[in-house]
Length: 375
Image 1: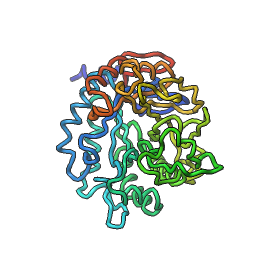
Image 2 (image 1 turned 120 degrees about the vertical axis):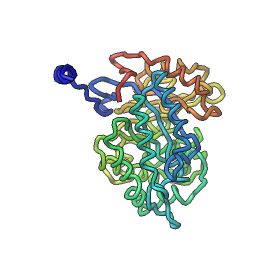
Image 3 (image 1 turned 90 degrees about the horizontal axis):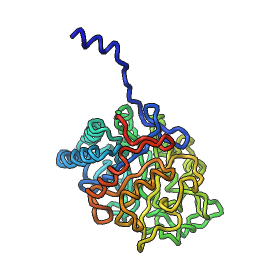
Image 4 (image 1 turned 120 degrees about the horizontal axis):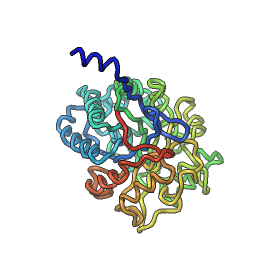
């Protein structure tokens, strides 16, 4: 007993701080970090959290967290609301009145974060999804179009959620929406480049329905980022952009998620992103001309870290999964998350993704960052 007390006095105390952004890098505990991991979109699409649903999913989450840890991964992106299918709780008029009807949502989320802490994995929650057509149109649709309904979500769901997790060691960050471009009205022409969407027509934006002008989507994002950052000033927030075409001012494109565009549309100065996230899939065996896998990160002239947040060897332009992870590590990106642990139709088999993660597990280039971290 005496020896144990002496050791406590002599040995340095290691405090694991939260993930931060410093310039173009992620930093944790004084070291640059490369975020290596996967998407775990869902176990049951839109029905994992709240409403007493997580108990039936928990063992599957645990398996994926353990496998990712054993493969050397350090981070994971998890989808939550989708389009409001199961959470948050809406009243009959489309206003949010709680996180979920049963009251288990916050405890479910904490269980996921506890798994992250157990397995040294940072968790990034993706709130909404615009990559598919609506199932419950009045829910997410109301939040995008109606600021009163959006405010009800902030007050009754998002802010309580952020308060409940902001001090958890495994919280990595937040992704407001997966691929907003899926629902963008590409016919919207404007002399204001933040609002003009016509440049996205050739690349196929609006595939889920050309429902919203950029001012509506940017306000939707800006207000949620602001609510998160007002509640937790150290939070890191992003948006999962479908292609660099919507996230850079280079090559005839425009960065719709710049600080300027977000604050111009939403009016809230704190509602800006701390890092960018781009997705990339090849078509007919080829990546398009702006794919991250054909560029250095510096080519986009973005002043924040960039993660390649979705990709797969199945649509990898002929590149193996190991090569895709290595490319992201070697070309200035600050993270790579393959798609997706439970979706082998658009993504790769789980064992394939584990090989990709494992291929860079010991990477520790001082100019890029380490993959190994402690949560």
